[in-house]
View 1 (tube, rainbow, N blue to C red):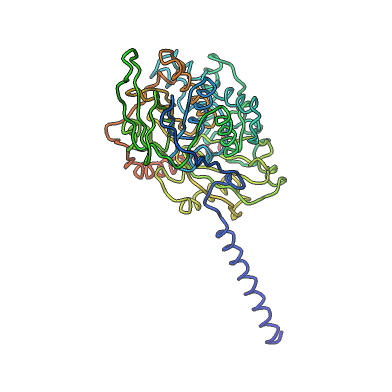
View 2 (view 1 turned 90 degrees about the vertical axis):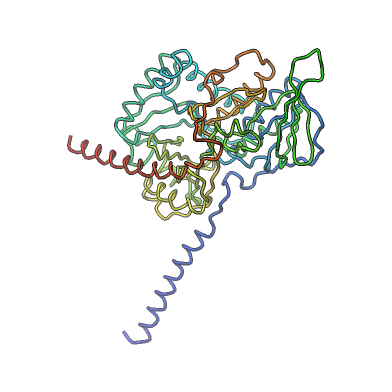
Length: 474
C-alpha cells in the first residue's frame, strides 16, 4: 500500500466518522419538545367579548371542564369556560392517551379507610367512568382514533403478580368485569421483552389520540351552547349575598384581568394546574406532579408489531411506573415515566426516558426520539379523585394519572351536582379532599421525594435481581 492509498483510506474513515457524528447531532437536534399529539392539529381561539353574566363559570378547559360544560349546556344553562392558557394547553392533550378504569387504591386499603360500601362503589364507578367516556366518544362519533385494544399491567416482581391476582378476585365479587391474569409465557404474545413476571389484562381498556379527543369534546360543548375562552385566566372569585331576598342561593363574581362575570355557580376544573393565587384551599389539596413522555421516530409498522404484537397499552407495577403503547398510526412507540417528582425541563428528562425505553426494548437503544414533553398531573393525598364544594365553589379534580376516562366522567357528575345540589351523584363526594400541615400550595418537598424515589428505584432493582436469582435456582 502506497502513501496515496493510505491517505485515501484515512480520509474516507474520517468522512464516515464525521457523518456518524453529524447523524447523531441531527437526531438529537430534531427532537421536538412539544407533544407529539399536537402535530398538525387545529387550534381554537375565541375573540368574542366575555359576557357580563352567566349561570355557571367553569375554570379550566380540559376534559373535566368541557364535559361539565357540555352537560350543563344540554340542560339549558348558560355556561362559560375560562382557561389561563391556549385551549388544550394542559394535561388533557399532554397525556399518554390511555383509556382505562381504576385508581391507585387497592380494595383492601379502601375498605380499611372508608368501609366496604364506599370501597365497593369506588370499584363500580371506576368501571362506570370507562363506560361513560367510551360511549361519549362512540355516540358522538368523536374522531380521536379510538382503539379498544386492551391494557396489560405488567408485574415487575413475582409478588406483584400474586397481589394483583388476589385483588382481582376480590373486585370480581363486587362487580364482574373483563379482566384476567396473564402468566409470563402468555405475556410474550403481547410484548417482546423478558422484563416481567406476568400481568393483569383489562380487555375493555383502550386508547385515544388525546388532542383529537379534547378537540372533539370542545366542539361538542360549543355546539351545545357553551362559550370557551383561552388566555383568559380567572384571577379572583368573590362570593357575595344574593340580591334576591326570596332566594338563599349564593352569587359569585369571577374576575379576569380585564373584566368580571356574574354567575350563580363556579366549578374549578384545574387539576394539576391549580394556582394558589386563585384557590388557596384547592392548591393545598392537589399536588402538581410532572409526567414525562417521548415518542420514537417512525419505526415502521412491522418493527412496532414485532415489539408489541398484542397491540395493547402497557403499564407497570414498579414505582418507576413506565407506561407505553404504539401511536395510532402503528409506526412509533410512545413511552412515559417518572423522570423526577419535581418539575424539570423535557430536555433534561430525555436521557432518562431513552434509558427506560432501551431497558424495556434493548433493540431500540440509540433509536431517534421525535418528541419529548412534560405536563402536570393532579395528585390528591388520598390518591383518589374528588368531587366537592368549599364555600359554595365546586371542584372536580385529583385524577392521579387516570384522567382520560375519569375526567370527562367526573366533569359530567360535577354538572349533575350543580343541577341538583342536594343529590349525591358520585362516591367521589365521600372521599375527602385531604391536605397536610406541611403543604401550603408550593410543593417544596418534591425534590426530596425525587431523591427518595431514586433510592426506591434502586431497591426495586435489587428486589428484582433477588427474585430472578431465586427463580433460576429453583
